[in-house]
Length: 264
Ligand code: GLP
Image (cartoon, rainbow, N blue to C red):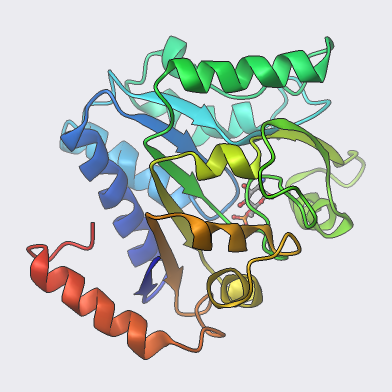
């Protein structure tokens, strides 16, 4: 696991976008796994800028989103469909048929629908780079504490803390969804490379537990310790509870030196 200590959310967003851009440039037919939440918004903004100003081409890129609320139609302003359109898809040249986001309004059997989503990922050749945020209690996607470490895409009941955290996005009289369809931890772990973004003091405990704590289903991000290619970008506040920061800095320097200044 490569832990990159970022000064602030700005440098984190810029580096995250650079990593995605580098991946797209070196492999134009790349399959990206994408995340929502407030953390990756700056990364999407920078990718939109690179597309506009530096002609970063997304025309062959295929995407799979991690999750979606159950009960919200794709047109609902707080759905992850709407989020992705607002922050990314409406502004870059990814063909709509290359975009996949779980549909939280499907009525047929979830088992069938989730198996179909997994089959689409397989047919696309698997995910090359999966972008992740992290929840306050250490979840990735909507894989709450006690998720099976080998779980696949499935419906999941959200933790009380997650529902509370998400309330800020909904109106005072609106119900906050308490269930979601999410890629499983096994699905995420199948990605060839993983990029986890963490910003803000409220993520410090989760980051420390995920990176330096024991691998446990109580902090589902900790399963990433078993993955051979994970990069964690954490800003100063999110990295505040990490203990091995001087080691991470040394590895960062060594990686940069041997990689013409790049971390990726
Ligand atoms: C939700 C999403 C996660 C995201 C997390 C943190 O639980 N399903 O993918 O990482 O929120 O969101 P934020 O970046 O807003 O803190």
